[in-house]
Image 1 (cartoon, rainbow, N blue to C red):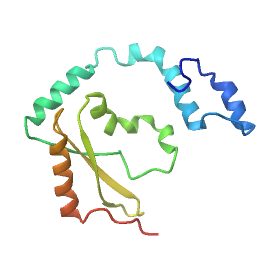
Image 2: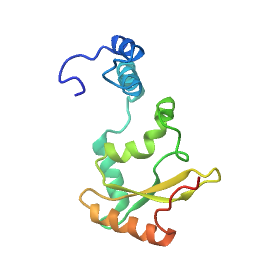
Image 3: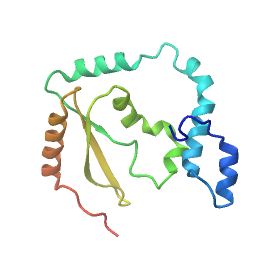
Amino acid sequence: MLTEGEPLRVLPELWRIARGRGRYSASTLGLVAMERLSKPLERHLFAGAPGAAEIQAGLEDLLGPRGVLIHPTFSRPAPRHVWPLLTPFDAVCTALFSVAGLPATAVPVGFDAHPLPVAVQVIGRRGNDRLTLAGARVLEDALGGWVPAPI
């Protein structure tokens, strides 16, 4: 998708970045490289793991017709830019629900002790976007809504 069907050659692109002529960001190239390196391992790593349809069905059974799930958006408070590339499995907090095709609405809930922003997501069944938005509104109202981060 990035190259309109042409293969993306990571090393030459990194050389272009070093010369100030890169067409892609270093983080994008890192993601492409990690994806390519992980492809051969996927078959072994995920052997016997449930597929997206099984995950979706299990979560929808758990939620029922009007239930929502409140879940962290990330495994820890907001990391610095590009740091999540160093810990790609932290994305499981949102990736699981994206893979299952379930609607999720993120809601800021405050700050940690540092003070970095912390949020949760409200997840619902497919087609229940209105319910996740309504749940997010309830949480936002109860917790004071968005507040600018302290300096």
